[in-house]
Image 1 (cartoon, rainbow, N blue to C red):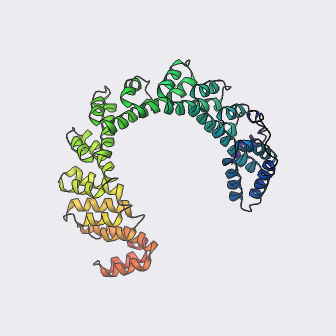
Image 2: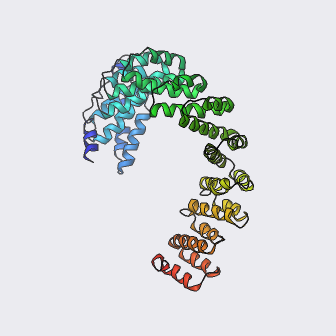
Image 3: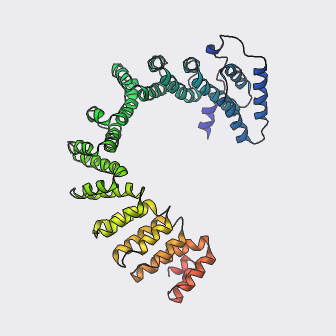
Length: 416
């Protein structure tokens, strides 16, 4: 709590001032300051603190260029720190949208601190979208510190989205150091999204670490989205076994977003345990698109792994949002171990959201001891939500009376 207070206190004296980039030109009409001051006064009249800050923020977000100098002066004069930040920071971000070069110069002159870092992010990105080379020069001209690193990252990211080739050339020309490292990281991620095939060799050559791992995954995912065969050939040729297997799984999972049947068919041809990892990943993607079809495919295969792990994977993905439909799919399975596995997965996925459906399906477990254990656990959750409905249901199902009484008395008695 104290650290948050000190962080906010460090920006209490920020000199919002009159922006140099907006001083030139004709003065705004006399009505503008008065009208803006009235709007600020009206916002500050809000009794509710959150509503008051939101109203001040909305003013900053909708300013015209002529209103920005007045808004910054008004923000500087506000007695409340939170009100100052609500109006002042949103005004600076708005200025960044309207005139990012001028806004960047103003924000660059602010004292180092939380507010400068927060505003430089949006202003630098807006500047780079308008003029990448100029924004890059401005970011590199900042004094060393957190704001400089943030500005470089945002410029690299936004510029790469606009002109990847130019951003790549800029980053390659930077001297070794933290600036180049941060810029490279942002440009790399833009590159692996835009052209994963071209980026793959550069990414492979990076030093080992979390950044390289994340970029390799992005290559696999983005490449497989457009050319799964090529992405898989690349993944299969990776020299490190752990990377090779992980990238194949990621490529197959991405492929399943577009063609789940083809993806699971390819996964089935792989050697275990890679086959199992790839199948689960593909089934998970399939279940987010057509869970009924995915469930039916896994159920009719008669494969032990698909029965014990595949069906639960699908249910874990979809049963919480489709409890009634998924429950019917499980009920339609033949009585036996496969259905019992599916019932367990269904309970795990739905108990917190629909204990009534979980309890009813638990009662279909074929093995008596398992049935009693599951119903007892599910009924306890149902009773906490709707005790009368739970009692009415329990009165109609076949269980020994002493077990029913123990369940109704509570979990402590039921455990004896």
